[in-house]
Length: 78
Image 1 (cartoon, rainbow, N blue to C red):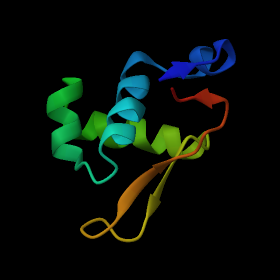
Image 2 (image 1 turned 180 degrees about the horizontal axis):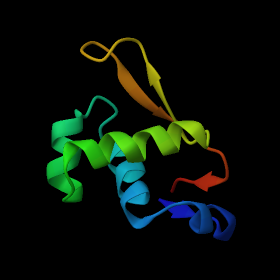
Image 3 (image 1 turned 30 degrees about the vertical axis):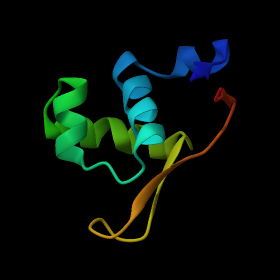
């Protein structure tokens, strides 16, 4: 995934990793994100909240049966 310069300024390294992982696996759980990004669950949830507030990520349906959707706000996905 490529990020525009404008988006790169807005997103931390961990937030970019989260978005990339969600694109690869939209049903990924917070625990799996935590292991793959290398930060604790609380920080994953905080980063997800930031991504949702900035309009980059949204949750479709409930936690157990739902999935994540990355909103292509300036993101270029190869």
